[in-house]
Image 1 (cartoon, one colour):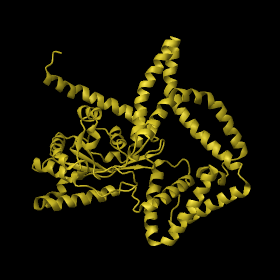
Image 2 (tube, one colour):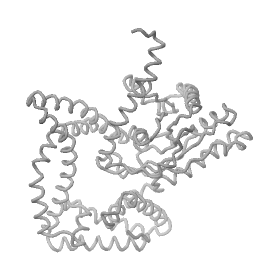
Image 3 (cartoon, rainbow, N blue to C red):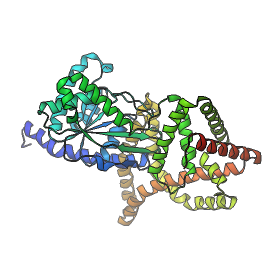
Image 4 (tube, rainbow, N blue to C red):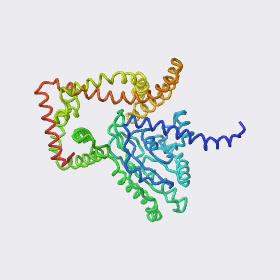
Length: 457
């Protein structure tokens, strides 16, 4: 009350805004780790610190993309986001007023809004002069595909405008980063954030001073080439299914102790070889696609998964093992039930909300994850308060505080184990000739993949 309006604004910018940013960074970080099975961050050491920096990324998954980069970054990230996201007044207040996001407008959002980008460029340049980090999605559009789309020129324009305004003394760097999801909208799928090596904008100085248009094109082409190296890039959309099926089979072939980075590098090799194979040997490629489709169609009809068949063929499963798994499930059920009743409702409500209101698939995971996150922030305090009022015992309350999140994580693991046990049980009770057919087709596909794609697990 003792502050005037200007002083209040400065106080909010200095104290409240960073607090909100870092609070959300913690909460969103936990949500992201749970939703995407602890994302793998590759080459984070490549990210320069305390220097003006633009992070240039692909954009397959709406609000999950900027948040995923921000929560795992050491420095605070300033976002440039598509203008239509800010049409909602509540989102505008949160993103622009509180978190300092800057809207950038495209022709698809109306030609009358394009002039607003001049202010966006000015704000971005000021941020870079203060050695801040800006995140830009250089494709200029969000599309849920496992490929890099042609880059827009906005990154180049902001980079050159910033250097030009300081007489090319800014030392601005660009770092490409690839966001690679196995299935962006699916809960417990995987995410790999892959950083490339940064490069300086000044390497294009001479070209820019000679001809700005040519320099912008050269910069954009160079960035596109560097970013393509960080992204799982399937050149032909018709190859998406075979890549996914090959990926599943070969990752199940690999040993369990081989980690996420190994699996990501395996995916990169699969994509590279599938791209080449489809171009050079189209008839053999088509035959492999049909065989893989047949195999996965049979699995779907029998309601089993490929990793179940792999375990059977590797003699890792038997009736005695199944019985021991069922006993483990019975022992763990009470704790699973406790975790379920305390954690399921916010998750399910978020999923239902996303399913009902989301029209674009790119926004499904964002609405699901962040609405569930918000509901957990509401439900957890209410549940804790209810336990405190009912039992009025510090020991009970303390135990409940510990068990509340742990039981939820246990339920996730339990449910996964339950599904795998169920799939193995179904496989055992298939007719012998059906089991032999499935195993035979799988072995043929594995041998053919290794032979034609020259892949080894």
